[in-house]
Length: 128
Image (tube, rainbow, N blue to C red):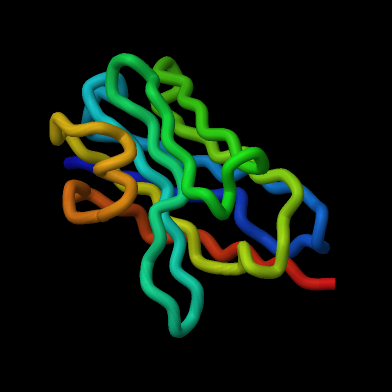
């Protein structure tokens, strides 16, 4: 059974940092691409960052490029999202998701339709 569990969310002041973890089970991480998405109240879900299944290609949305870094540890079955320079606009529930679809990381991140397995989400709140 494919499972993804997010952790590492919390409350932080603007300019602070958090590292989110997406711990996976039930599948071999190296055979899947992983995406991080977020949804703020009243807003549509947004693809934040994605990492490819075998070549580790990465994509970042314009809103987080230069501040967030995605990485994965296949041995630990975990994908990380290091978030630096957090802003109030980053406040949202963050979700990780998995897919085996053969498409570019940009294409899969811009639309979430390729992802069939999702975690339950972790809240990130950025406020003074």
